[in-house]
Length: 484
Ligand code: ADP
Ligand code: ASP
Ligand code: MG
Image (cartoon, rainbow, N blue to C red; front, side, top):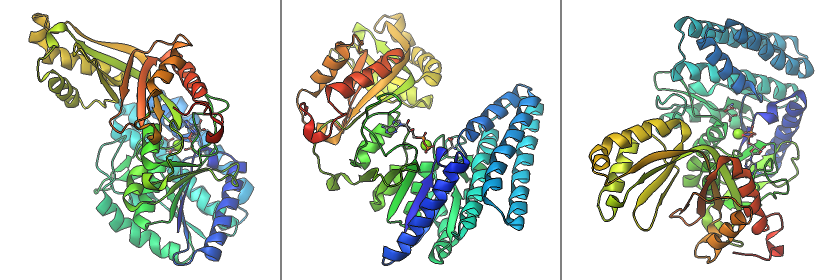
């Protein structure tokens, strides 16, 4: 059994829908031909590309009183989805039914935006309802396109099966409840040879209030469904040939990687590799379900297989480089900190109280400062909380610096073969140094699968390219001179 997730570009145009229909039909045929015990396919889809951004922008503008913009968006959403209908759906009843679904969703969108305008405020809860509409338009459409191409398929709204907590904008699934609702809904369909087409990204609380799992989280939905169904493989169909040595938009000669471990992919995704949502591996790890990242526009390419560390050969050291921008490096420093226990604990408990996500920590060996990286948006509250926590120490000059360095990026160099390999840090410094890129801070993750550095955001792309070059990641592993 396979769970196949199609991303925004994979359902972004008439041509893309045609590709997806062929891919799903082929996989269905392959499943019945070759799989022994449990054949079948379940599909998870994103919104058509650009749609989630349009919905969010419309809701934001509505909160500022702009009523025209959301009406324009409503029209372009209608045109965008109807153009696919026009191309694929000949059956009159199917067309009419889809038309009704679209109009219902679009009316909901316009009603929601209108009430946001009246309130003059956009809450995370309200935003989740609006931003989840994209998948609730694309999934019924994809199900109909599959049927029109001879694949039995049925639309499933994930708000009915993916149960989450109520952290709007980034909800976490409740696995027991999700399993309880998903299995009886999806399994009988899959077993009958019907492809359920499930909305990615969205869920609902136990009380049925709509939530989203966070931007880019349709991958996560696929992994959740894959784990619940105990799929043989979770396939993430996107617009590149798998996970690459770097973002091909930054490094033009990046190569695709055949195989990675869950751990390596989690590090890459966490530090900005958009190709997979950072939570995607979580549901897959426990059941050891392989994840494969594939290209909708080059389906014959084997892509990247993501499996347990013990099943991946540890050849090569550095596997990939990634970067994440929009960060702030906060420093707590002062000579009075030396040898004083508890400063780090108080620092991080103050940060935790603010609910900020710390992406990297680095402490100088002299203990004169602690630096850590948080998203730019959390920096002001974090700095204020620290100044309040250390008010006395600041007055006595035990601590004389609590401030943030804005506009930085974290560069992460990832590969589990880096464990215990000497000289790696030296090569990384040589690479960035030779391009006059200043390294503001450095840290090695305890997993040793990652060395991270902080640089000015404006130099992030140069740093990624320089490190990619020095490790010759554009070449196959066997041809690389430098292995450290
Ligand atoms: P989808 O809409 O299919 O979910 P995304 O845009 O979310 O696709 O993710 C795919 C994009 O991720 C690629 O087009 C690529 O630019 C970007 N990306 C960033 N880092 C990497 C990487 N290491 N390997 C492959 N793609 C990457
Ligand atoms: N449509 C959602 C987003 O753009 C989820 C996804 O594409 O994975 O964030
Ligand atoms: Mg994505």
